[in-house]
Each structure stands twice: as C-alpha cells, then as structure tokens.
Image (cartoon, rainbow, N blue to C red; front, side):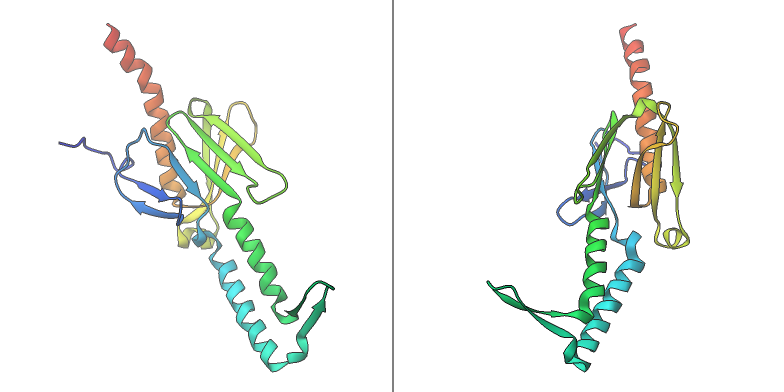
Length: 194
C-alpha cells in the first residue's frame, strides 16, 4: 500500500526535455527542477508572432526591403522588415532559457545567466529562509505565473528570485513544507533515540 500524500506532495514534476509540468505524485524528498514558464511571457510571444507576420507581409509587398549582403566568402539576403521579429525572438529565447531553479530537501539553488556573459549561482539552505514573497502582474494573475522572491536573514534583499515561474503559490507551499520537514527531522531523531 502506498503512503498517503498531502496536497503539496502530490504536486508536479518537470520534464526537463520539454520543460512541461506534469501533475503527479512526487516524493517530497526528491528535488524539483523549475524553469521559466512560457505562459509568463505570453504578451511577448504574441508580439513576436505579430511582428513576424507583419514582416512577411511587408517583405512581399515591398521587395526592396530585402537587402543582399556579400561578405566575400558567402552572400545572403536579409529582409529588413523581419529585423524587429528577430530581435524580439532573441530576447524571448534569452528570457525563457536564462534561468534554472532547483528545490531539494535541504537547499534551493537559483542559477541565472545560463545564456549571458555573467552567470549567478546562489544556494540558500532551507533552514535559513526568513521570507518568501510572490510578485504578480495583472497578466500573471490571469496566467497563474509570477516571480517568487526568497529572502534569508543574511541579506536585506531577496537572495533568489525565481522569475516567470508557473503557479508560484504552490511552489511557495512546497518550499515551506520542505522547510518544516527539515525542522521536524531532528525532533523525530531525538524521539527515536529515547
């Protein structure tokens, strides 16, 4: 017979290859890897596709916007009307794949800058967490996404901010439950020793 799981324990797992959440029972002892959710960047995705299709339309209506560039080794055509979509696409890819967060049974690790020149890697032990704040915009409340800011007693500001994560309220509950389990573990060990 399987052990009964609380609602927080029967949360979700993340498939790292597709970056999708799947709602299924997980062992609270397992670590949870979280990536930024594409839902958090819905307006930027819509802007990208609008600029992409507008660029294609302008390219066919005004073929003079296509510039041929010859580098000496090779030549290529660059549609100038597509540049805004290309720039927004790179910004969107940077936002989506620049951060990774891991919640384990003893610490939280936030890695920012995976696609940047500067990389920040912060580890906070669960026992040292003093507060967790959730920041959501109007769109974030509709899409159930937001930023989860984790602070410790060592810093005045937040140490780790999980940007654009899906269901930040549930993630906060998981962190608090793991912290409670961490505090209960020495008490249970002392009771077993007696």
